[in-house]
Every structure is written in structure tokens, then in C-alpha cells.
Length: 374
Image 1 (cartoon, rainbow, N blue to C red):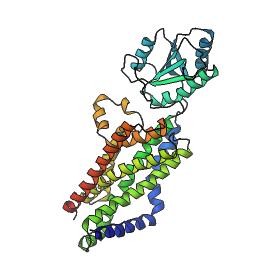
Image 2 (image 1 turned 90 degrees about the vertical axis):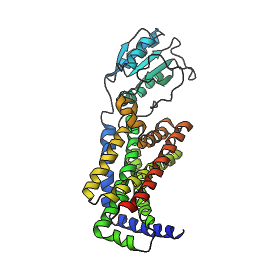
Image 3 (image 1 turned 45 degrees about the vertical axis):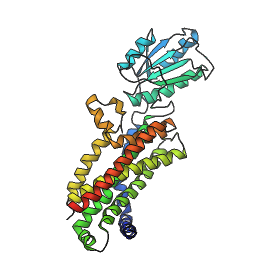
Image 4 (image 1 turned 45 degrees about the horizontal axis):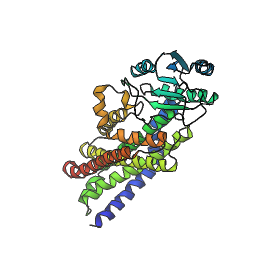
């Protein structure tokens, strides 16, 4: 029983020595894509202009008029004054505006516990919403008042009666949103160039046959490949996180959030490491393996909400997102980066799905490796 652990450790050390001998090439190959995404798309159009906002002025006093004029003074926000809150929220539900600002009769209240400006927003244009929320808050603070932000789901015709945790805090940005998706991406893509690629290379060089006839546990071969792929993904997760932080992304949950990001990244890595090992066991050419792995991983990444909230997906695509394990890794990482805490119900759901995906990937790789390897 204990012999398999020795075999796994020996083969794992071999894999890591090979990775170390080509570490510059491996890191460059796997990090250039996420680096370009964070630096280019994360800073693209970071200052939105003419973002439509409906304003309901229940205060109707001099200060509220000045507040509206302050919102309209720049080019970022395009103000549309509406008579009632119901009419304004209908515009928001139909995606005619990005946000609704309700100025309560108490404006300008100086009590932070009773804000006199309520902002409703949806996620159909998440980048524009993230850009204007800090501007609204800043203008409100000039009048000594506070704002309350409420996420308002699309197609909802009546105001929310319960508190909804917003996807964006007033201090967050699209860059933070994007970094969360990129971290999940490198966790998955790192396994493509890890254990799976190593199996095909060993087969081409004849090393795999030597391992199969050697007096070692055959399961140790595939398990060592999986662990080596996950180790490489761990390195890529750290690098992507550092790039995001250096470019201005923040982690609202602090150091504990970093641990959660790494944990969620490793869980999704184990699942994809198993899947790519299964592919490598059945595919004999690196070119076909790389194309097939990308065909599987890329759609899962896009449907996980990496670039935009999954609520923005067309209805026929929603099931592909709900049953996509990468969705749960992405949203978990964003919770700790943006909200600042990890809701227990969401944490249980995310971790359960990822553990199930991990178990499926590892078990499938072990069972199919023996059946399909040459």
C-alpha cells in the first residue's frame, strides 16, 4: 500500500525536474495570455462616458437639484429625470438605463445609517456600472450624505423587498471582476501544459512504455502526472494574482481571501488535470491534444462569466453556465475579492461542486488510463 506513495513521489520529482529545466518557456507560454487580458482589457475603457442613469427626485429641494447638476456636470453620466420610482425601475429592468438614483425626501441626511440616496443597478453592462458607482457616491458625499446600493435583477418589475448582495461594491471595478475570471482560467489552462502534455511527450520518446513494464504501481503514473499539473497551475495562479494586484486589483477579504483564491484555484485545477490526463491517454499527437483541450476548456471559461456576469447570458446558454464547474470557481474567487466575505451558502455550493468535479476527474483518469494507454 505504501509502495504507491513512494512511486508517486519518485515520478512526481521527475516531472518537476523536467518542468524546472524548461521553466522560463513554460511560464512564458502559460502566462502571456492572462497577462495581456489583465493589462489590456482590465484597463480598456476604464472611464465610461454617457452612462444612462434615471433620477427620481423626491426631495425636490435646492440641495437635491445641485446634486443632480453635479452628476450631469461631467461626461460620465447621462441623467434622465423620471417622476416615480416605479417608472425608473421599469427602465432599469428593461435595460434602458444602467442605474436608478432615488433621492429621498430626507436629502441631504448626514446619517450614514439612514442614507438619503438609494442606487439601484443591474449587471447587463457591468463595466459601465462599476465605473459610475464610485462617481455617484463621491458626488453624494459632497453634500454630506451617504448612498445605499442595491443590485436590481433584470426583468424585475417591482423593487426588491429583501437585501441583495451586490456583485460590485462601490470601490470595486471591472478590473477586479476580470482578474477573478483570469485566475480561474490559468488554473484550468495550466493543467493542459502540465501532466497531459507530459504523457504524450513520454509516449513519443518511449519513456511511457518503460514505466508500464517497470515494477511500479501503474496508478502512480497517472497520479504523479495530475499532481505535477496541479503544481504548475498553482504557480500560474500566484503569478496571475500578483499581476492583477500590481495592476490595481484589490482583495476585499484580505489575506484570508488570498488563501480562498488559492484553494478554489487548486480545486478546479485537480478536476481539469484529471480531464486532460484522460485526453492525453487517448490522443497520440500533441497538436490534436492541444486543440481538443482548448476546445473543451475555452467555452467553459467564457460561459463561467469570465468577461461578463452570467446573468447577461442569453437564456439558452444559462444551463451551460449553471452546470459548468468553472462558474463556481470564478464566482467564489470574485466573492472574496469584491464582496469581502464568502457567504456560507455560496461557499458550500461552490466547494461541493468543485470537489465533485475533482473526484470525477481523478477517478475517470485512473480508470481510463489503463484501458486506453498504448
